[in-house]
Image 1 (cartoon, rainbow over the protein chains, first blue to last red):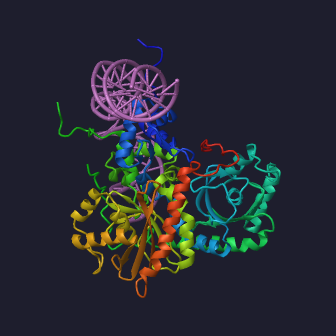
Image 2 (image 1 turned 90 degrees about the vertical axis):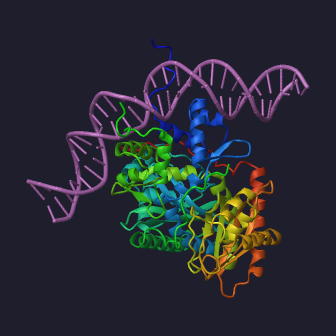
Length: 277
Length: 277
DNA sequence: GCGGCGTTTTCACTGGATGGAAGGATTCTC
DNA sequence: GAGAATCCTTCCATCCAGTGAAAACGCCGC
């Protein structure tokens, strides 16, 4: 006999449920109760409870004092092995550092993920222009300096996808006309850097340059975000480009040489210290 | 009838298998073939293949040009929501920045995870003393500056666990006697900062100070690592302590105020752009 | 062409995963 | 401080997602 609705909704793998639980966390709400977690991942409470328990035991999730769940440090550790995340970051950091020190402005490092950009690193002084970016955060490609660089060097299919959709207007100066944008992208390729002047917020201007991997593929972009009034993009470009070239060189070095870095005298035992109960 | 060995090894949840696959990646080998992945996670090839496919589809894993697997940017994005990871980092970054700018030495930020420390952030100039740490990397507690700070303020159970095990000797100067170490920990609590002089490598000296959460709990530590010869720990301590206090204050501010940060005009649509196939 | 290695698919079986229900614990409301 | 509301945890019978063996497939290097 088949009842009204099968109690178990078929077609969802356990893996997808676990991933849905991880995806339930957002920057706005990085801590969730079990019920919230279950609702957002579209799981029954017992199921969410069991999966969450396993994730906590492993360290992918943690529970705070009130029993709420949050992303655990162990997951963060593993995730920091992402070549496009920390690998890139480590190679780039010294150069970003220099860039910051010379300018004391916002320095950003981003990669493309699908039709959006993801910020991998951000250095913001206490006195620099406020920007909306966050490490690990996403943003549209058509308005920011790094976005324009990455879009200009993205596969044609991605460009079509982005240019095909209606482009979000952040300010009066945001370029939303596909034709105009294509022209801008051509300029970016020709000049070797991108300028976004007041396209995200009217008071900010960003200058960005491409970073390439050993094969010559553009894999990331650096940018400098400064106050828009009185900024001289053409004067900032060489700075940003120099940093980008330095990072490109560093990437080539790490790819050629040893895996990632020199190793400690002997690695610390990797065993998970059992919870002292 | 029960055959030699049950073909399916019971008692392993799907979740644990997925997590084992993630844990298979290491800093030394951040890219793995399917076979390596299966072996390290102790899974049959078909199983590893199926799980890996799901993980790739979601973005937890990626495949490089040669078809090898690596940690994906999507997992890195989610993991960057870990309060003890990026949340802490964001609050601390401007102060670490200042510390670096004044000294041009290695600046490190770490938290305790079980009986070890995990480095959450690291600023290393091109010219600073080489250190063995890596963002996301683990290390023993008894030898480094940050380790001593975190150990000095850890629960008694953790201190006993660490002091009970044989302490690894990195150099001639590494303190491995539990009695001596206890005395040092008492000093750390009394002075408000820790000094590790040549205990990891003979040429490096680190000065570290504790960071507390709004409840007064020590949750992290900052340190400055400099060349050992001619270093004046007592002179560096105020610098490090000032940074630590600044971060402590910043943590209190984020905890009290808005969740994490000001939000963009309207959040970028959070949907995963479908892979254009 | 042939052997070695890694990847992918197929297939029948089964045990881990499942949701409803019920029982506890805790916090909020009046 | 009673009562309600919300959230968390455990139990149990059912069943479908997950499983490994085996074989087909693809890709080198020799």
